[in-house]
Image (cartoon, rainbow over all chains, first blue to last red; front, side):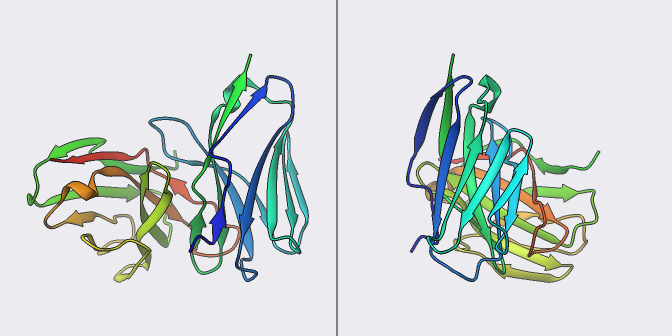
Length: 109
Length: 114
C-alpha cells in the first residue's frame, strides 16, 4: 500500500506561470516531508523540506505547503522557468525516507 | 566537494553472473541506502545502513546483498542477477536517518540483465 502518493504522473505549465505539484500521504506519524528534483541521467537532488509542525516553508521561488488534516502537501514554483522541467519526487520521513512515484513537470515556452 | 560516487554508471550483464555496484561518500554520513527506480514505480528502497556493520532490508531486498565495513562505502551485491533486476539504481547518504536531513544521491547506475 502506497504511503506517499503523487497522483499526477505529469504536468505542463506555461513559462512564467505557477506550477503546483501535489502529494498525499497516509501515515500521520511522518515528521518531515521533502521534495526532490531529478533531471534525466542524474541522481535526485534535494529541493525543499517542511517539518510536520509547520504549514509552510519558502525558499526563493519554491514554497511547500502542508495541510495535516487533509494529509496533503504541495510544492509551488513561481514563476516557472524552463530549467524547472524535471521529475519531482515527494518524500516523507519516519524511520526511513519513503518516496512517491514522481511527477514529470514540463515548462512550456 | 561533497558527493556520492557510484560505479559503474552503466552495466550490461548476463543472468547469473555475480556483480557489485560500488558506492562511496565523502561526507562522513552515518546513513546510506540503495534505491531502484522503475517506470511508474518511483524510487523504492532496497537496503539501508545506519552505521558501520549495521544494515537492514528496505522495501524490495530480494535478490540483493549489501555490506558496510567502512563508513564511506556501501556496495550493492547481486549474487545471481536476473532480468527483473534490470533497473536504474541510486545510492544515497545522509547525516542521520530521520528528521530534516537532506539525502545526497549518486548519479545512478543503469543495469541491464540479459
